[in-house]
Image 1: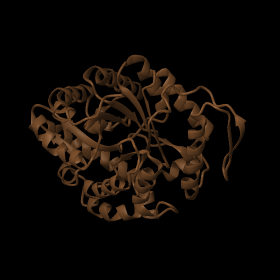
Image 2: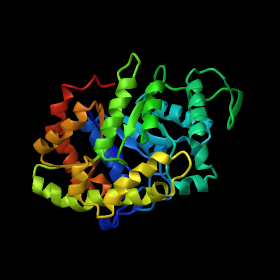
Image 3: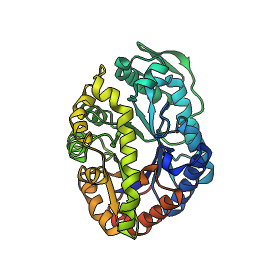
Image 4: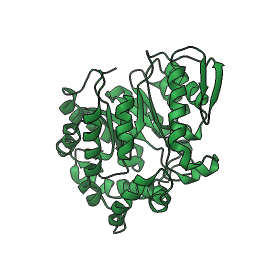
Length: 356
């Protein structure tokens, strides 16, 4: 199991940092991750989510990171395909692959924010079909030949999409996965999955098992799981710092998804099932609850190793570590990154596949 990083570029009020500071901290942490041997740095794309995520153009951040790093792979987690024309998506993917020297991991998804769909004037009910058409065009672009396509939403007439990716046949493709249907679809498409942090581990574990049972491709399955984590030599200090930071992250996450959870938007029915879990959250999100549901890992290196084994044993290949959930000072995040690299990574490295 490989340890990756996950960034929202958050601005929690208690940190009192500016957007410029948040971006500077993120890039500095990615440089450190390159030195420490983390596998990949994944950045989200969100719009109109003040506080929780100021990462609206992750490809620009990753382009800056590409110039500052040498080995660290760079991941989009994820591009909400319905909000973009597929030609723009194909161009950004190829450009990032070129700029990074072939280090890109490309994640796609539907998106989940009603505010985003409304602002970009895309009906949420069309999200699945738009994803399928966009993915078709993205895959056609990898051939290097002019792309022709006839779909319900997109049409192209022998257009050559430039530039071309460096990785052959193309950068690894991943999809965000929340609903059981998406896990099954991803297995059929041969795509890696990016799970969490929406659902308790008990639910995700069953989805992963189903995904693995349906996988029928020569390459091994790729399974990513996002977890809020804080690992420090002093376990008590780790818990004290995490007690405010990680619950803040999840409170903000569920606040942004509340309209979907309660509104039951068309084609997002599975989110309504998570409403049952949300009833528990109404009692108050705290660190103990999050740890109980496998959504947070906090403690000493040895404690973290023991807790992380549950994900490895279920088949997770990439653990996306939201270090401090983006809500601790950067100095603490870097301290935790060093602790993870020096004390935790070695426990899982022998079971990991070769680094790309």
